[in-house]
Image (cartoon, rainbow, N blue to C red; front, side, top):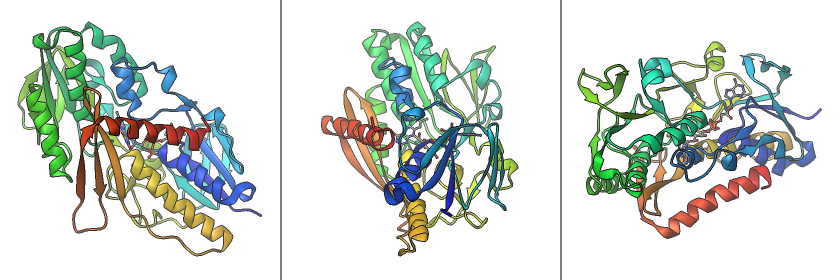
Length: 377
Ligand SMILES: Cc1cc2nc3c(=O)[nH]c(=O)nc-3n(C[C@H](O)[C@H](O)[C@H](O)COP(=O)(O)OP(=O)(O)OC[C@H]3O[C@@H](n4cnc5c(N)ncnc54)[C@H](O)[C@@H]3O)c2cc1C
């Protein structure tokens, strides 16, 4: 009987895992890929939607288009996980696995920041980005805050990109002179592992008259007074609040007893959890790398190769290296890149590549290659 691999979540991690298993095993694979959604959307597409550069429909990659030998895609919500017995309950039935991979990502904890749901606008979900695409054209004067409500959060450069793109957007509409932009970040610098990248971003903020407040967290919002309350009690008035909510592991993973602190502890080199035959990859796992698609993908490849080796009785592959490259939009049609290395040295390091038009093309190729590989598009 073939090894039953059940993958929970068809995001960056789940899609790469299913694809690599199908490539390696073909018909011999017995993979079930479960997701509650109808479609995948790249994280960075949310910024494109929010700033009206594209439509929500244009960025949806429908799961029904996945056709891979040995892979069955199931639309269902995971309601319970029994990691001891590798059993999963969904609203569409039960699944048993020989190898179970949890790739359910990170959820947003709106309740952790009082006032955010009522008075702020999160831009980290597709629905939030869609709402902002309608709201932003009505913003013509006053102070906009791009504010982060807790770390770690997905794609550390994304709020910096948002502040820069907001400047570009308001400038194009001829209202930038009537607006202030403040960026509140609970980290010491925009991209802590790469001082060069952080310096370039801080310089870009200064050039664009964007106020940058590092080491500061948004604790709550008072929508009635239109005030953001900072850690330590300080206050900032706002007319428009663009928020990154605090993140947490999905409830179903917490209820399964898989979480120690906030996320699922794993061996960072193999992604194995403490439950035999159960792995966790991507944002749901506590690996010590940033919450970003490239890292989820890299981790998924290591798990897939280990499973292929196990099934084919081949040699076990190398370990997870914690390397990844992130593209950073600076506005003005220029994109930079930071290559980060999280696991090989005593502390994380990053190498910065100056914004250029060539990197715009490279970022497009990054998306196109995944669309082709995962969706055959
Ligand atoms: C604005 C923004 C910009 C970003 N830019 C980049 C970038 O440029 N580069 C980059 O690498 N990363 C970027 N990211 C981060 C990236 O999107 C995430 O880190 C990545 O998607 C994590 O992959 P994952 O597989 O762990 O989880 P996800 O991709 O979040 O996938 C998890 C999946 O699990 C499903 N799921 C959750 N709960 C259930 C359940 N109970 N039942 C069934 N299914 C469930 C969800 O529907 C989802 O499809 C960005 C993120 C944002 C928000």
